[in-house]
Amino acid sequence: MSTESAGVRFNAQGTVNVRQPPTRLMMKLPLQATGNTLELGLNALRKQATAAERWLQGLGANTILVGDPQFVETVSQDPLKKARELAARAMGRGKSTHHDAARTKTVTLFLTAFWDIASKSAEERLVLLDRLQFEASSDIPAEEKVTVPDLEQLSDPMQMQAMLAEMMTPKEEPRQAHFLFVSQLDEASVFRAYQEAYQQAVRKAEMLANCAGHSLGRLESVSYGYAGDHSSSVHRHMEMQSCQAILAGTGYQPGEFESVSEQPTAADFRLSVSVHYGSDT
Image (cartoon, rainbow, N blue to C red; front, side, top):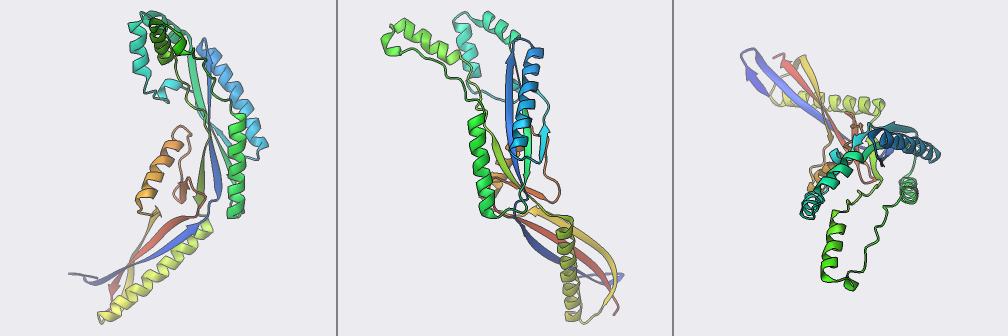
C-alpha cells in the first residue's frame, strides 16, 4: 500500500505456478563433410543432409530444420590445434600443412528434428528417447580409427617421429546427437493461469483495503509478469547453460512460454498479475 497526495492506493499481486510435462522431444544432429574444394565439401554435406532428413522422417519426426553450413573451424575448438601447428613447424612441415589446409575444406551443419510427445506418458517418453539414442548411435558413421605403430618395436628416433605424427593428426569431433525436452504452455493454459492470478490479486487488494479501513476505488492499472522456468537451484542453472550450448547452431530458440531441459520431467512456470487500485474513502 502506498500513500500519495492523490490519496491512498492499494497494490497487490497474484501468482500461479504451472507444471507442464514435456510436449516435444528435440534432436540436434551434426553433419560434417570434407572435400578438396569448398564446392565438393558443400555437395557432400548437402547429400548427407538429404539422406539424414529421410532417415529422421522414417523415425517419425514431425518437424526438421536444416541449419546453414559453416566451416568446421568456427564451430569446433580443438585444444591440440596449436600444438599440432607447432609440431608441424618443428618438423619442417609447416608449408605443406598450410597447403593441405588450403586445399581441404571441412564444412558442417546441424539438423534439428522434433517429435510431438504431449500425449505420451512418462514411460513412453523414455522409450522414445532410448530408441532414438540407439538409432542415432547405430546410424551416424563412427570416427575412423588411425592405425598407430607399436612404439616399443621402434628405435628412439622413430618413436619420436611416430609420436609427433600422431600428435599432428587432426582429431575429428565426435558426431554425437544431442537431445532436449521442450515444455510449452498452450494458449488455454496461459489464459487460465493469468485469470487465476488476477482473481488472487483482486482478493488480496480487497483484503488489504479492508485491513486499512478503506474500500477499493477505481482499478487504475493491471500488469502481468512471467518468470519462465523459475527454479533457482544451482543444478538447474548449470543445466540451462548446457542446454544453451546444445541449442547453439540449431537456429532454434525457446519462445516465451517454452522451457528446455535434458531431463524428461515437467517444467515449472510462474505467471503473475499485479493490480493497482485507488481508494473510495
